[in-house]
Length: 276
Image (cartoon, rainbow, N blue to C red):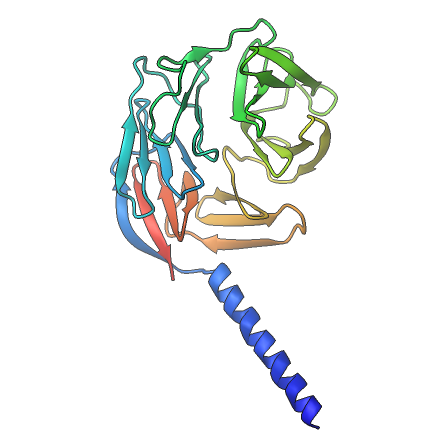
């Protein structure tokens, strides 16, 4: 009888603990903390220190702390539309200008790294037109090339393509619309608005497609990939395939987790919300 009582209490404590975890990890109510910006963002990212990095229509890059206070800024000498912004490496922030076919790398203070005082053009005939690009874990670049419809890995030091994976057997070339790319946990995720999120291994071999169409942007939190659709933030576990969602107070162009907060950018401004 004593053993049964102890077991019951132990199980009850486990249930309470699990409920506390669920409450902590899956908050549903968002409370407005402040307005971050009075202008919209064209690209957003967050670094390992939970600092929000944004780009505006004029190409200006701004870093914010977790409370939405501006810390640093970068204004390029040549104005171009920022197509991709990746800060997850923290010490190596990538800014890509698709229309110029140029990119620049900044440090955590948004100061150009050596060799990047001016945006750099992709110096190789092996790349026709880079649609999207992202940093790889080995300090190289993953690039989707529109010209020959392929996924390429570009060595920054040698300025040479070291890996080339044709995609014409995976996608119908007339139907694709590649919008985003990101390497995460030894996998490469490529968003195609028409077919979903294509998943490759870190050698560029195609593995599968996740059925999330119409996306321009996604991010990661632990084992989850997350993205917005109008007024909802969706989470998808890339291993268990479990899903959850959070209702947003406004229709979001971007929604990105910044520490214990959620930054939401609409077509007009940027806001910071806390979870309750």
